[in-house]
Amino acid sequence: MKAVILAAGYGTRLLRDVAADRSGRFAHLAGTAKPLLPVGRCALISHWIHALSASGSVDGICVVTNALYQAAFEDWAAQFSNVEILSDQTRSNDERLGAVACLQLAVKHFNIEDDVIVIGGDTLFKEDFCLSRVKERFSDLQAKCDDSCLVLSYQCKDEETHKYGILEVDEDLRVLCIKEKPLPSETKSRRACPCFYMFSKNTLVLLDNFLEEKKKAPIEEKDAPGNFLSWLISRKPVYIHQISGRFDVGNLPSYVECDLYVRERLHDLASYMV
Image 1 (cartoon, helix red, strand yellow):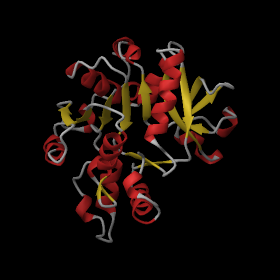
Image 2: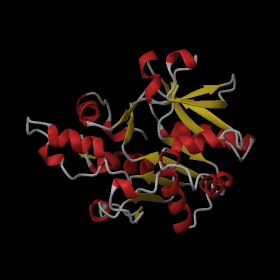
Image 3: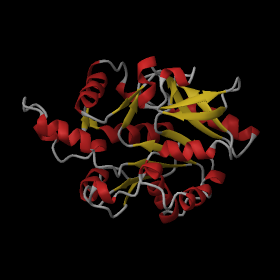
């Protein structure tokens, strides 16, 4: 199994927040890619490298970034022997390829013909998340059907449904559909879906089909990986694994919350997410 960490975003909301902050406490974050932000004692993305390595879940890790931040990621990756950096060659948010195209780029560049864990580079989870248990669940599903894919879900509040893709599932926890940012009245489900997916190797060939269908669509339809997931569920079996929550670092308050959690609330940093 391989891991692809999506880190080609430009963090425009966070950059605006840092520039607007008058306290001076966060001035050192200016110009830093979100996955490289310090969270606890290391960069946010380093928590993923540690968990992926310590759990033995994968035999290769690829980080897809952009040309603007490529040098910074290469400097960061020098401390790891199992991480490769790939640039999408864009230099601005307006040029971005989108997350699905970045995943396709990694699959083609590294000739990946294996199952893949796809991880949002600006996302961390709470301490109950265990990579080893998630992979065990994926293996059980694969034993029954090697087309099976696995995603995560957690319970969000009523007033938060309009922020997320919301999963509706059956009694076997198979995904029936995804409602994109629905009003609370538009779905009974409160299962939010973070950017963490385990895709079977049989799924990867469908990236080309999806992007071909969407080649004339606005970038928003190709950027969010949830759009590919929504397209996929009528073609491959997709199941959920439930967790308690996530940190999605999109703005300054969410960054502060994530950093505080790792610094002060983790019980065992060494085993975090492993």
